[in-house]
Amino acid sequence: MNTKYETHEHDVLIIGAGGTGLRAAIEGLAQGARVGVVCKSLLGKAHTVMAEGGIAAAMSNVDKADDWRTHFRDTMRGGKFLNNWRMAQLHALEAPDRVRELEQWGALFDRTESGEILQRAFGGHTFKRLCHVGDRTGLEMIRTLQDRGVHQGIDVYMECTVTRLLKDGDRIAGAFAYWREQGRFVVFKANSIVIATGGIGRAWKITSNSWEYTGDGMALAYDAGAELMDMEFVQFHPTGMVWPPGVQGILVTEAVRGEGGTLRNKNGERFMERYDPKRMELSTRDVVARAIYTEVREGRGTEHGGAFLDISHKPAEYVKRKLPSMYHQFLELADVDITKGPMEVGPTCHYIMGGIRVVAETAQASVPGLFAAGEAAAGLHGANRLGGNSLSDLLVFGRRAGLAAAQHAKKTGTPAIDGAQIEQAERELLAPFDRAGGESPYQIHHDLQDVMQTLAGIFRTEQDLRRALTEIEKLKARAARMCVEGSRLFNPGWHLSRDIQCMLTVSEACTRAALVRRESRGAHSRLDYPKLDEAWGRKNNVIVQKGDSMELFEKPVPEIPDDLKQILAEDQ
Ligand SMILES: Cc1cc2nc3c(=O)[nH]c(=O)nc-3n(C[C@H](O)[C@H](O)[C@H](O)COP(=O)(O)OP(=O)(O)OC[C@H]3O[C@@H](n4cnc5c(N)ncnc54)[C@H](O)[C@@H]3O)c2cc1C
Picture 1 (cartoon, rainbow, N blue to C red):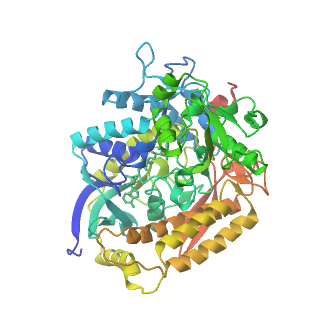
Picture 2 (picture 1 turned 120 degrees about the vertical axis):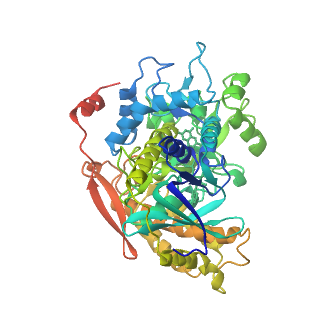
Picture 3 (picture 1 turned 90 degrees about the horizontal axis):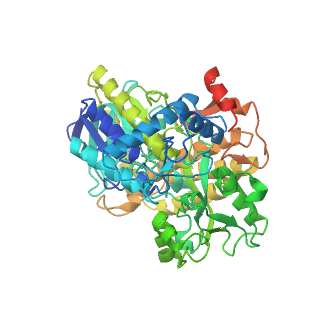
């Protein structure tokens, strides 16, 4: 191997330091593996830290009738039965233990009067199920996992972006990355890699996601030969801020509705009566997002194109205690006191249910040595994710991925990396510096966000999706000519030029999968195919790289065993 690069060696390399990456690292270390964690931003600043409402786990602390079966059923129903049933089962079974473990490691949850972990209501969950810390649950989760991981001795490489997975024949051998500050290159050698890089929201214009969500992990895995699945299912959270323009898209947690917040249109109507009279504001996110969008489209929206969300009927002290971030967010960013009046809210691109296709038990992707979990992986949530089910997903499958990755590393000999792969990765990364007169990555990103927002958003049609694909092809051609100025030192334009390649890959995957799924299911709404289609209900969309293009094929959804079918059939 070429020795001109800074090189680090691990049994297990984890890409991403959110809830998934940290939980995987803790498990890998517990198995005796040498674990390294790489992340684009500072440790503790991953997306997970932004999570607000809570962690879904059937602890039955508040509603005694809750159990894993009901959680399993809710998750499958919410996902419109496209979920990997085994993942949904493992998730429901193991989430309570993962939460208790967090508590043992020092997480301080809100409490019931008898001292148990308090749980709140959330959309699509039959019972009060979300363990929370006010509306700052993600912060407590990251703090706890980080403390635990650091004490156990994880090696962390911060502000370091992985741009390519390296292989030894078919198997994973390591990763190529660069330090964001200095622009120097670094090579990681590893027997196993866990992708824990989160989602893709920055490809859309209005999004709750931070700058880190550019689909890197999915693009890295796809380039390395792994399969992506169900990429058409992108969740638009019903409630993002809509005003002022500079804060558009920032999340307004579902906990507002969980705590009794009501939605009204400009005429004062509680319009959810028209869309889901039984569950009203606590309907699933896909239904509420479409409801708000429809109200606006039909002329009943608020001044800035949203709906009113009101929690001011609750005592001011209660609102400030249960929703402190929301209180400050609106006061500071929109000059609105939510204890006195309503918030203006509208849909925002929030989460992707699709991602890297993995085996339920091990989180193993289709490339030997490659594992994926959390938002970067597909399967658990099917066509639509229930709120709170992501944080529990990170804990359950982060642990499983760390375990399986460590076991895989023990079984395999040290892989070899040929220098040509590394030099190729370096050339790709430096190419934008060598082009004169090309376009700025900022303009290309701006145009991609426009395309995805307007042509592959909440409501889709064949015509729009075909146009989106044509536009993405043009953007790919423009990206091949894009150029950056300056040096490799502290150069955000250069960083974006790399992120754009990932966003183009995942945007194309979403659009192609959305085009072929000719039905409406969960978060995927086709105006030209507005109904569920039974045949599509039995198929997952899978994408792999074939030469330079994407190949799509359908895979049957695994058959649900009879005992679980019975649980799904029960009425609750
Ligand atoms: C505002 C907000 C509120 C939310 N509230 C809730 C909630 O209450 N309950 C719930 O269940 N879910 C919630 N979610 C969803 C949930 O927070 C996320 O799905 C979850 O945190 C994703 O965790 P993760 O570990 O998969 O990824 P992340 O926490 O995003 O971590 C990704 C990591 O990957 C790193 N990374 C990415 N690309 C690279 C690369 N190329 N090289 C190196 N490192 C890389 C990043 O730096 C980061 O460390 C919320 C989401 C948002 C945006």
